[in-house]
Amino acid sequence: MPNSKALDKWIAKHPGIVQDVDYGSGYCTGSGNAWNILLTTGHCAYGDSVHSIIEETVREAISELNNVQTCDCWECRDDRARGDQANAQV
Ligand SMILES: [Zn+2]
Image (cartoon, rainbow, N blue to C red; front, side, top):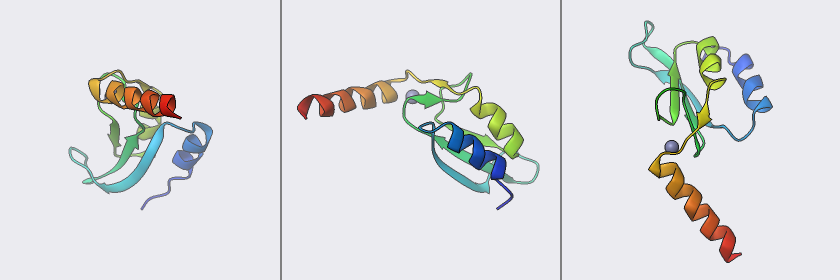
């Protein structure tokens, strides 16, 4: 696994956005490997409603992370509704 110090730092600075980071096989990358970053519910990558970022380099991954938006897809709305319900029951 390549050095991810910059990525770790970004995640520490922005809690609640990244759920999981994995380095492994990535499609459409020159090296065949990529950073697979899973976003938490309610967040998606800029421009397309996907909940993960797949980039070949830490630098690219971070620039994508800087553009993460609030996600309003049915999945996230559903999850939020469930969370609200759970809160209401407490
Ligand atoms: Zn979503």
